[in-house]
Length: 227
Figure: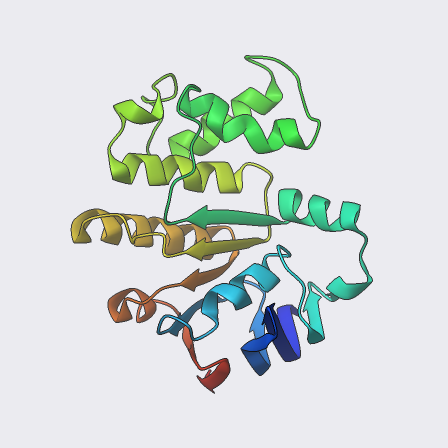
C-alpha cells in the first residue's frame, strides 16, 4: 500500500495582484517503508510540496492521499492529530526548547497529545528508550546548549519518533552540520527506515545525501523532472 499518493497537485500563491505558481501539476506515489529524496533548486517547489505532504498546507487543486485517506476530507482537528501522531518532522533548524532538558524536549509531542504520566512513568521511559536508540542515553538531563549540533539533531529525531509515526519528513536534516556529522545523521535515519519500516522523505539539495535513498524525485519550476 502507498503511504503517499498525490495526483495533479497545484499550489498558487497570491502576491497582491500577482499569481505565483509554486506547484504546477505534480503526481507521484511513495510506498510504505520507502526512503525517498526530494531535490530541486531554490524556488523549484520542494518546500511547498513538503508542507503539503506534512499536512501543514493544502494544495490549490489536486488530491493528496496519506495512508489511503484523502487529506482534503479531514477536519482541522484531524489534521492536527495526524501531524502530531502520524508524522514525525525533522528540520534543518533543530527547534529545541533551550530551557528544557533533552528528555523533556523529546516528551513534548506526548504532552501536546494530552498524554501525561509523570517523570519515571511509561511515557518518560519511552523517551529514555528512544534517546538510547539514537545514542544519547547519557545526555538526557542536559540542555540543548550543552550538546553539539549532531547531538541536537539526534534529539530532534528522537522527538520525531516519540509518537511512533509511520512517516518521517526531514527538511535539509544535515544542512547545519559538518560532512562527518551529517553522514552520521543520515546513517541513523536510514537505519530507522529499515529497522522500523518507517517511510522516510528527505528534502535536500545535496546529491550525496539523495544518492543514499531508494529513489529521487527532482523538481524544477513546480514540475517533476523525474521520479
